[in-house]
Length: 382
Ligand code: SF4
Ligand code: SF4
Image (cartoon, rainbow, N blue to C red; front, side, top):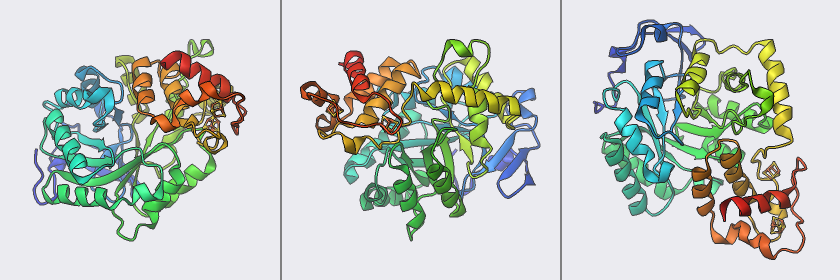
């Protein structure tokens, strides 16, 4: 459904009432097409300065290959889907496009393109529209920004301004996986207030600076979307009967500066697990204890992707990015995504450089064995 004069008709489907604070909203009338039990006590929040009232749990499309997974989430009340031009080798948007049939006017769609020339960015975007089988997206995000310079790239702003004028984009956003504080601060300091949405990695193990910059961004009415909320989704024998993932999702949603989280949902069981949080987002004391145990479990195994080690490698290896690939392989258990992401690391920052390095002098702030992890990446991805 194309928007008219910047206004959308979603209120025809939703009657929303404020229940506490400007951002907290509750669905009062079931949305058309939503299963009956899904209408109970869903919490909605306003996404920053946009007009979008989003259910607090959205769906991240990174690994989903079946339209039915999305549709099951939509039926449970999810109304925000986050994809990207590059996900699934360019196929994710096609799957989302299939899933949106019958739902496009009920679900907000966010996608992403990479920085480049004006022609390259416009080309990526047109391909996104084609694959999504829609004539607009709600949020276009400039993908994986790592610095203030990238966040304020004038060509990206020019492209998005043009797309807005053409009615193909409603709101502008950025995503960041590394150097997040600098990127977020650039948005906060931007005199143009150009970007409306920030998709940022945020979980119960994030350092305090992330929480602080999220608060500052929210105070500037930038809509906060949280990703990587489960810090890799690692499985272990310790969690045979209980899932710490709901608790991790709830931890993020306790922060009212976050409008919604977009966890990946690989199957219907994960759809049920994550969407249940929309009806009971309060973190119980038992879940807090569970998170502490889960945190200790991860502490010994996972990289926090903080990027502090990158400057300690004399050969310029992008250790953080290599670790992200390992997280995809070992946490998400998605070797395809891991290999694809690994191939995207430029040769100048590749783990290949470790091969001729006599002794690893790179240091992890958490004491992880970087040399061993780089060797593991070479074994898995070479
Ligand atoms: S072994 Fe360590 S110091 Fe050497 S190139 Fe690899 S990450 Fe850098
Ligand atoms: S290896 Fe250590 S320092 Fe490097 S990104 Fe991971 S947690 Fe941070």
